[in-house]
Image (tube, rainbow, N blue to C red; front, side, top):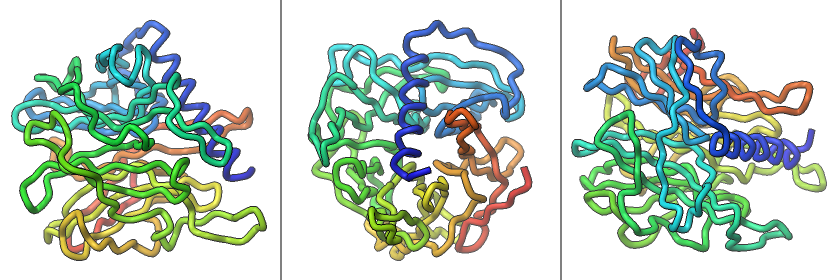
Length: 332
C-alpha cells in the first residue's frame, strides 16, 4: 500500500473519530480494559491531588483510571469558543494535560474544516493550529485561556506540547505540518508567563529529513528521508540530558524515534538517534511516572485491518531514564 494512501486512510479515520465525538451523545462506561479503548495520541497525567490517571488524546475526550488497567469514560472535557477561528465544531487532535502554577492546561490541535489557508500541490490546506485551554481541575472542563492565537494563521501547526526550558521560560514545542512545507519541522515558540498567548516568532529546531531512520520512496522508487514530523514530547534523563520523542514513518510503518539536545536546551543542536526506540507500528509517545514509582511510555499501536480501517489502541511500555539515554522495555 502506498505511503500517501496510508496517510490519507489515517487522516480519514481521525476525521471520522473527531466528527463522531462531536455529534454523537457521549455515554461514559466503567471498568473498560485499556486494550478495549480506541484512542490515538494517548497522553496520561498522573494527578497526585486526586490519585487518578487522566488520559486524553485525539477526539477531545477524557478517560479516568485508578490503576491504568480499568478505565471510565469517555468524558467530553473541551469547551471551545464557537466565535473564534476554530468555528462551532472544530476537530480536536492530540490533546495533552499539563499542570502548571496551580492550574491544568489542555494543549491540543484544533482544525476548522470550513476555512482554508493555502493550497499546495493541488491540495487545499485547512485552518489548523495548536492552542491551549485551562481548568482549575484535572478533570476539566477546559476553556480557552485567552483570545489570542498562539501560532501564525497562515501555517498549519499541530501536536503542541509544553516545556520549561533552561532559561526558566515556558514554551510550546509543535510541528509545522509537512502538507504545507513538504519537509515537516519541529518548532518552538515562547509563551507568556500565564500561557495566555505567545511571545515573538517560532523557531525551527529540526526537520523531518534530519532523521537517519525515517524513510519513504519518491515517485521514481528512490529512497529518501520521510517528510512527516509528529508528536514531540520533551524529557530529561537522570543525568539531566534533554531528549525529545517524536514520530515519523519507515515506509508504511508508523515509527517512534528520539533525539537529544547537544547543549541541553531547546535550541540544540538536536542529534537524532540512528534507530527507532519501540517495536514497529507504535508512536506518538509521552512519558509519565506512576503513583508506585514506575516510569512508563504511553503511545498508541497502529495497524490497518482487512477492511482498511486504522486501529489505534493505547499501549504502555516500561522505560528507564537512568544514565544518558531513554531505554524502552517491551514487557507490557
